[in-house]
Image (tube, rainbow, N blue to C red; front, side, top):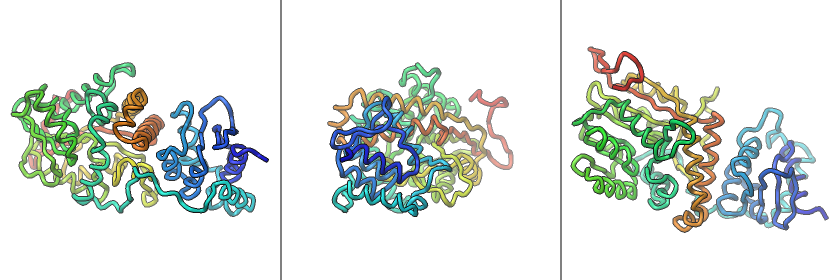
Length: 430
């Protein structure tokens, strides 16, 4: 009788219409597929049922998070290989609906069902969020932020390192330290905002307080940082107190839409706008515009996706939405710039930092893998697997130009004078 791995390989290749590019080890210990690369370990029949009940990204994610499926070898190489099957099917590869019209493929599908065991869908891992329509109300945003950021400050310390900055670093060279690169990113933002002593800065989505502390300590500004995460706020307040900056930095648990004590001289929004949502983005830009002094600057640091010819077919990433950033939405850079301009901002500079995020994510993955047993104790095995998968896959997405990250500098240029306060030569930032 054919072993489980060989049979599984044969059935999957019939179903997909392309050769399986990686090695498989099945629950009976058998192996099949090309040697020398990473191996997908299908630990039990439940993994197969997960893939059959949710073909594609979500089924793979459920099998991975639950521990039913794991990878031996280079995780990045494994994700590169599987991406061609799940995320980037070529024009010569058959779609599933087309493939199932083939009697041989239907027979393969029936064979997989028989291999999978009981014809019942396994329950999703407990780390999965019940998926909702993207409402982006204050309540739903607070719930989504809590899911991602209230995982535990100790866990984030392990992954992010002492800087506690959860956004793309700014690397002078690939072999620089993460701490130096994150400090350089914070300083870059301050320079672009042209901060001077005595000014007021609003840091929207302030995280664990790193930007607020850097701006107050290095540039002498007064800072209000807002976050929806209780755990982030508590951590940031302690850091502010330890730095002796309580007279210049205030950390609030507050929705940006509820900030009413403007005007501010400058606003930083670093890695927060991805949570706003397409339907709310113009409102987001208008709220920040109202909170700025005439001539004030906004630095919007945001992940962006590539535009599609038909934007109506865009679908949210199932894995990210279910496990990582519930209700998160990425927009093309052009859409972001248009919305900021529609809200009355003058966009003065755009800097793409795509390669920098790949370097940052690989360092976070290395930090997580180096302290894996502790990471599991601080959260759960499933949660640690979520973070490892999403950060590694995201690193490849940035490196492969499937997504990018951009710093957009915009000015609330007053009318009718049109005096922006910007330097004549770009990127001197003063």
